[in-house]
Length: 124
Image (cartoon, rainbow, N blue to C red; front, side, top):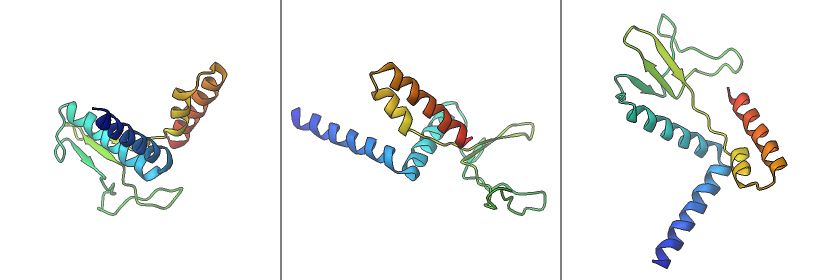
């Protein structure tokens, strides 16, 4: 039992370390959570929602962002029955959030909450 507990603790530390340091891993984590939410909501992949969906213009050409000149591939596009779509680009910024949850001092918590909110706003 103690050995199993040690293995679980080590895996949790490794996951926390990966989520704190690697933005690609954070992105993959966010996409996994998003897809789980969509599935649990009853949506079907490839029918109601599409992952890594390439946005195109009326001629079928890939749309590019004006600011970065990159192809626009949001994480998810949800198709509504009335031909409308909802575009979701999941971003997960956990660094300030983790510092917030680990802080005991109220002033540090306020500072980290503000940093977390700012990180979310900058992603948007």
